[in-house]
Image (cartoon, rainbow, N blue to C red; front, side, top):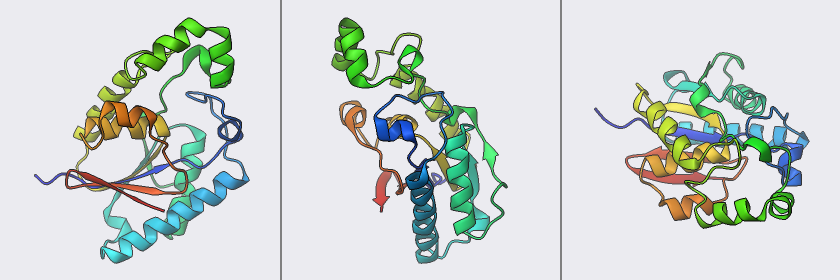
Length: 199
């Protein structure tokens, strides 16, 4: 069976993104720029589907259950002239949990817990924040999600889940993915064992 193509979109910006705060499981809404980015990503996807002679109705649509991803999905579907709320939710697409770090910045955590911060900097993939998740565990749930796909899919989720999916599908190394910025307002296309980004 051919591998499904994934059109992957990170949610638009929130105020916590703008402030450099860890969000994780916290449900922070899109800000004005985030709404613009979500609509922009929808426009990019519409162009890509037209170039590939794809009908949007032929794709699956699934979002992280967090509000910032759901809002982004609804902007994307509106750009495709589809009913905004007709999509699935999958908890495996939720953002990596940052535990006690949620709501704080990197600089604050480095100052408060230098030993934990230093250990995580040495092995960001396998070392979770206190009461949080590791990227390695997120990689497992993203692999599980991918293996359950039955066709080409538009997924709206998060930066952490994007990195985990890249490693799960062998399109990035752990070292590269751990440090890779995941752009908002872009479409990442996982297809035929490769990855392309459209902005």
